[in-house]
Image (cartoon, rainbow over all chains, first blue to last red):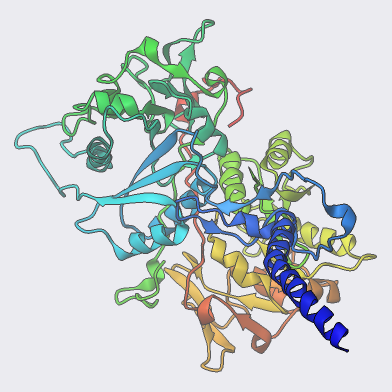
Length: 345
Length: 264
């Protein structure tokens, strides 16, 4: 008995050592097992912080099925995961597309911005600059922008109403959207440093037009100013730049005033941000602009005809349509209104 | 990670079958493009596009292929005698009827021998505007769900009247509020189960008074107290009955100025 007792005393430190080893090794084993499992269960990996306000959809490429690890599953797997997020995750390599949209309050405003946002939500690295023609930024727009999840900047400037130049017989009104677009240009120049290398493209997108997703990828490679056809402008199915065999723009396929310096619609061109910052005094002309010359008033300060980069398969494809929305008939509202004015439309 | 559009299909989410009648006109491609851009965000959406044409056109076929959506492409031509334009006949076949019925027929045909998925059927015209929230509201419809629609009936919006108990008890409209279902096509969705249960329920083709098209279908499916109000008990507007202006093409002249091979 004494011998046994001495033996057990000698063995005790050994058991304590074993216990110590187990207590140290066990948590690491557990940790490694769980971490390995997580590289197989896909859902966890989706929660990367991309710095934007992207709304994460619960969908990931693989369903959350039960995965049982067996000895044979310890294998390195490289999986391509198809992930949907809204908007798409920000990329460090894509130039940012700054979409400038002037907007004003009217019954269809929310509808227009909703369906425009639904399009923009597919475009990676998009920054929406929404400029209200209003004295103050409205709650409707504030809420809408926030709820979309898009990267945005919300500005406002009110176009003076019924402005008339004394004695000027031409239409003295400032074309709609001009002050708003100019405000966006000023904001860009105040926000981005000429010398910084953040590549960007500026595109003027009115809130009632229709844009294909392909269009945004075409404009992304703009070096100075790129151009393409636009449907439903100038009284035609489409207007388009004339492109020669060498791929240079040499004229305009339009019926209305094809000799304008830039016979192109607002939706038919994009400008590299660098150029906007370099030519810091280039703005849309406010007053005394003939109908159809608004775009020229900006572009002639930025670029010459030969510098233009034709996109959309050398300007043979339509990727943007100048659609217009009918004014809804609200005759049954009557004088005092039938519907609840607190219900936002 | 590769960005996928639409979101991956889920085995557990009910399917939304969207039936869209469409017809050829200058703005058709634009309308379908921006509609597709909206649908591409909605999980488990199956788009049933029904052309009013004798043949499926390349324009629509190509658009559907390129978009990446789950789709079915059908066509049926409305006979000239029934088309709008015969204005002296007070009752007529409203536009899109034959096409919507063909969509219903296709659904019933597709699931005659197989178990249908859980889900809803929604009639979405190609010029309306739909919020993404709308589709999540309609997804869990047991029989027929309803909600407000903007810019119909000469109002900012029309809406079902919902009692404090959450039951539909009437219609907040100026135009004929006593219709059995004073609601716009865009204001309701029907569960697939119900569509299959009532195989004879269709939109009436002829002799339909203005504003009664929806009733002609719904009366065979449900009664008013069986309706499920959505959109916060019908207090939020999630769909707008927008209409697109016809573009001026006056400068095309007689012989056409633009290249007709360039698709618009």
